[in-house]
Length: 558
Image (cartoon, rainbow, N blue to C red; front, side, top):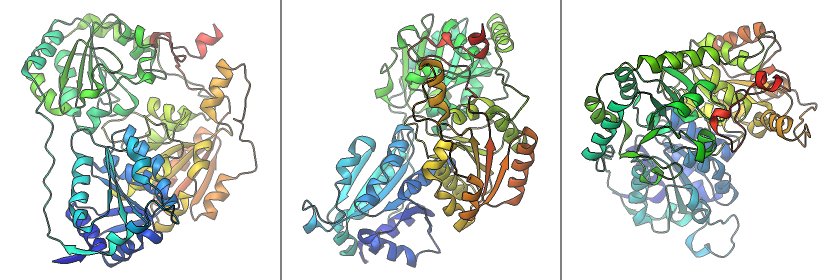
């Protein structure tokens, strides 16, 4: 049958099972929005307050559901406003398709009104991108974009469509998409055998899981391996929930704000089994001093990550879950009692701790955990609150912490929480933000209010840019250059003005009551949790130092 380009866009989205699109209309994309209007009973559109919010919402939707997130924007500034969200998704391997429109083909390259080469702009931050100038190429381009976004190591794909293509007519035939296959082509038996040999001879093994284990849904296989060989394990920020945060074998997060136990275990182990992690600088600290006593096995789907940051002794390339399903039967059962005993001593000697006499970031996170029994989807922005959320909330399952790990995007959380709640309406979704981050995209409260999306926004409000101030305190002799936010902004009034219930808390008891009330209300709520401006995230590893040099407040006082 013959359809115009806009009809083809919508039909292809329906082919791919898309049920929600986040976006913002404009002149160049009007034809597509007009067609979307006709299919509003099949595809829900969430009009965000800003295009950046749309890209973060598509990202959060994808992370929470495992499906491809979709966002729309018009040409020029509409398209460029997606860039931060696209880059965020790229750094964290999130499957997303961003569809933008551009001026007509005759106007391209002439500095036409709201023209931008968004394909060129996003080339370094997309897995692939397209500009469609012929309507005959449109359907196959959209299908390819979804396939590329999902297969292998996921990532964002951008499709830019000229306005004349959205109106042109061509033949269209419905196609049922194939499910992407897990990457097993590169799994080599000799690599599995070498990994099993190293594991079987190890006396002090340690597992480190990253975001790849989450994306691959490999939690069961990781836990099976750890239990079989009685091996302690920790995670990166992106690997939360693969190891149950309540498991006795779990040692906590690794790296700059990881636990002393995990960092010391990595330093002393004789074998590191690294699963779906890319050895980020925030994890390894001084690369030259990282895990020097250990042989290292790296399991990853992306060949580019092997030996990129840390040279390893053995690598197995392929989908993490499929690799572990083949590797686990090759591994011999073990107890490692002496090693487990040492890990237990480290955990007892170096627990996470904070001042419990007042409301702090850690106390607020613990009250959120208590109120949700660890079953919520926690979203964060970036900074101290992000680290507290990683340290003090016990993640039982993967896909429960949504956070910008690679790019570190302030303002990510609220849009992502809206996307997550839209995709998983049965889950309690809470965004934990700092006041600096909240200021960046607080306008998305209006989106939550407009659609009555019951997300809970918890602002840990210390009236400063907390993480930057922490660095200024510790390393810049307390020169607080542009990090103090004391002004007249009242977040509770802002929330109420944007159609959202606002609450303010100053004690732990008030925090406990407020979070439970917010959950019971089942509508969008902001909790302004006032904490001290000098609260810090500990432990901490100075930039460029070995991770075993982590220090805390006790070390400073000593």
